[in-house]
Structure formats: structure tokens, C-alpha cells
Image (cartoon, rainbow, N blue to C red; front, side):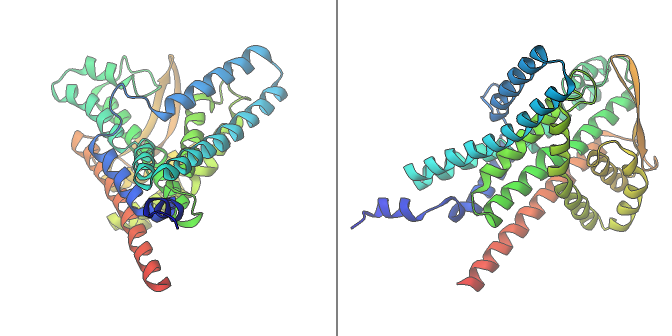
Length: 339
């Protein structure tokens, strides 16, 4: 006869704790985010990606070989990261259900960037509020790739808002989408798919460039991240449109403006927030002194202010809570009818 503890371990699987994992992870991200100096899974992903990329770039110059190496990198990193996530939670739940719940919740919280985005925005806005434009520029350079040395105050705030609204999807909503999908649809737990998506996002940010030397090596990573983000991005647009009661306007303006953006996702995300806030995003950015224009998103009805940046972050939080609430409600309805 099994002891109560062994019986619990034998019957408790990650999906039984799905709601608890999602709720705890969301609360941990809201409360503490990623404590400075603590190890983070993305650091491990970044180490592997960086070393592999440098090995390929130093060894081969042939574009075809680099493309093949890029395909291996993208598919291998995403698949292996998902499998590692599954292995971690499977082993943790086998040790003890509560241990598994804790480990999965903590690691899943690291996939959400809600608190990190808010902290990054505040880091730049605080010196701006003190009229310290130089410090604000320096802080902004930690988070964006564009040149910041000569940005005016309005351009600094535009850069902050673009960062907050672009990363609302790939940093917050898309990881939540894949965590929910893993828990509720595929029954493999919240962490593996969220981990896999995080790997795709990290790949895109590190090697997914059109410029050399990553043109060929990063091509597959960029395409894979675009594909994985496409549906969560549109679902975010629809959710924000319903929450703001502006869905028809958002969809029309996104069709007009966001489709001009080279990214199939970031333009839609930024444009949605621009319409709700009544501001204009996009314009000319400089990278190493070279101007790179981005399409203008929406018309400038209002100036970009710290209050509107905070409003954008609040919209992301409401969108996040909406998905979480719908998931919990559907789960309870399913269990009631199936029971």
C-alpha cells in the first residue's frame, strides 16, 4: 500500500497545479520581478547563444553554411530549452508536489517581464522628472539600441514608450500565452512552452538582425520569433481594443500604419497603444550615427508624457490580468461540467 506522500507524488502532475503556478508566478513578477544580481535563465540562454554564434562566425564565411547553422541554432535552442524546462518541473514534482509548485512558479515568473519593464521605464523617467536630461539619456542607453546622446526630452519619452509598448507583447503577454497553452491545452505544465518562447525571444534579440554578421546566421531566429509572436500579438491587440472600447479604430489604424513596419508584430503592438493613448510613435532613430526611419504610427493628438507612459504600463497589466482571469474562469467551468 502506498504511503500518503508517495500516493500524492504519484497522482499529482503539473497540470493539477496549473492555476496555482500561473497565479503565483504572476504575483511574484508583480511583487519583486527579477532581483538585481540574481541568476536568470536568460543569462544561461544568452551564454550558449553567444558562444555558438561566435564559433560559427569565426569558422565559416559561406552564407549557406551560416544559414544552416542558424537553423540548427534556432530550432535546437528552442526545443532544448523547452525540454529542459519540462525536465526541471517533472523532476521537481517527483521530489515533492509543493517543491514542484515552488520551482515551476519561480522559474515561470522569470519569463514575465512586467516588473522589469516598469522598473526600466522608471529608471529613465525619474531623472527626467528632476530635469536631468543627461542622466535620463544614459539610463535609456541601457535599454535601447538607438543612439541616445543627443535625444531631446520628447524623444527620450518616445523611446521609453516604444520600449514599453513593443515589449508588452514579447516580454509579458506572449510568455503568458504559452504558459497558459502549456497548462491548459497540451497538459505539459506552464513552464516548458514559456521557456521555449523565451529562448526564441532571446535568440531574436541577440542574433535576429538584418545587418552583418548576423544576416544569415540570425535569419531563422528572427523568422521563428515572428511566427511564435504573431498570434499572441493579435490577441493582445484585440484584448486591448475591447478593454479600451476602441477595437474598430485600432484595427483600422493598425492596418494603415502598422503594416508599414518591417516587423509583423512590434508595429501592431506599438500602434495599438498609440491609438488608445492618442499619441504618435515611430519616426527617425539613429544607430551609430546612421538614420533609420520607422513608419509613423497614429496621428499626434496628445504629447507623450510620463503619465501616458504609466497609462500604457497599466494597460498591459489589465491585459495580463484579463487573460489570467479568463483562464481561471474557463478552468473552473471545465472542471464543473466534466465533474
